[in-house]
Image 1 (cartoon, one colour):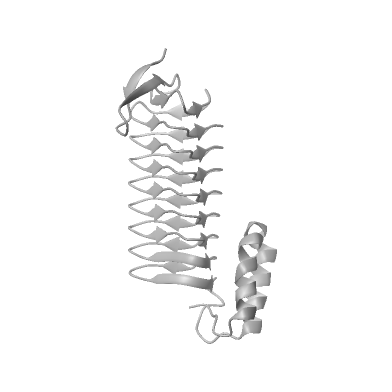
Image 2 (image 1 turned 180 degrees about the horizontal axis):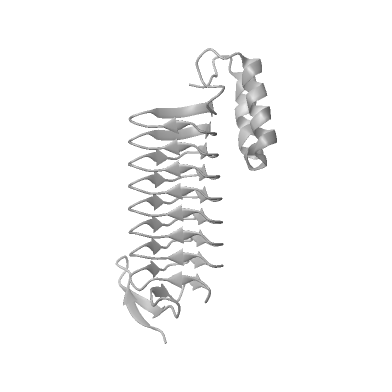
Length: 222
């Protein structure tokens, strides 16, 4: 049965307690019966949660966010904007995922990390601490971004790379093999082509980098 409930943003709105877990769901949101919404969790505005996803703890999913598959949003994490959390991805702790971001595969965002704008995190990548991933950056493979590090711009961080401390990466490809200054353009192009072949979901994202490498002689992984 629908009743008025406050989600702490614009006052009380029509909502109901989800039958699987008892968490509050606004009538404007869509949460299917197979989803688990914990008693202190909230889904509101025009958010959609489907599949066998879980929203636990005091987590909040709102805006036009989409959570599906076996993804989990837990702790006091927030997923908003047009963000997508799919597959087996996890957003937990005090993490925030917003904008038009996409977190998928077995990726995990936790701690006080923020992923925003058009960024993507996939594979088994981890973003933690107070790290930020934003812009059109893509963190994939087994990469880890932690501390107060920032990965942004048109950047790909892939493989077993660890970005930590106060590191800031704003362009190029960082795969743990081809990193470094003064890399020849031919080597850069080969690295892009290899990544596109090995990781199909990166192909569209890598095209602007390949074009940039051809136009800008100073372009390098750094």
